[in-house]
Image (cartoon, helix red, strand yellow):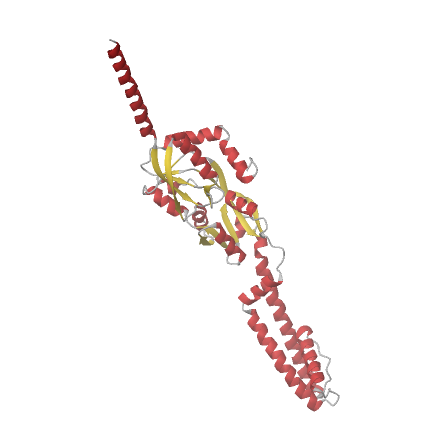
Length: 360
């Protein structure tokens, strides 16, 4: 009898252990997770991936006992396409929930409220390098070179002329050339002449023409410099979305912002990442950057030494969620974990960690 009881107990324990192992095998899943690098939501460093989206996803994966591999994509569009084709089961980044994307992939419960803002160059006045580069790009330096050659030729001609007809003109070449150069530069910069009239009324007419040429040269130089200074100052005229009309705008390729800017008919250039967009505005290829507010704010927070500023109010309100492939059966479980993270203050803590304030 004791042997029978021992046997039955052994069978019961074995069945229980096998059941636990089967349950663990059922609950443990191995999936591919697609990411797009977009600080502070997905940050790529020597220590691997981190960021708000990564931290939240890894917390969820831990709670659901999900094993996963990360796959990195170069744009929002590539990430969405990969998710729609089941190349990855979950898309993790600051992915805006839109009607267009929802036609191809599923979304979880939104976990972050965002929107778009405008970043411009923080204009403090053009320095000499900016002015020189602006004049070069506009082609004005070639005109200035022509004027310099013309001044040189006029100086030589005036020296020969005055040495021949003006008895009081210095006989030495150094003194003569310097006197002629002074007269030419006086005409070019101020439109005035102090030299002697040698030919009566004819000389007066020639002098009048000479003065008119000088005034035109002064006006040309002044207008070209003013034009370049105005171009360098354009970004300071932007304070809201309506100011972007007739301006060149930088947006992220494949983002919801790109679709929005294209929809309202603004002129724009697509870039693959925020660093390229900043380079575009620094090199005057674009007048402003339009992007997700938290991304722009985080960039400015991390690069305070750069001459950039964010202007205007939040527009085009967005909500971020995780994208799910069409055949993914984890939507309910992931959404429940997101709700738990919101109720427990975990997401609020993430905001505080990455932005320095829980109110952002």
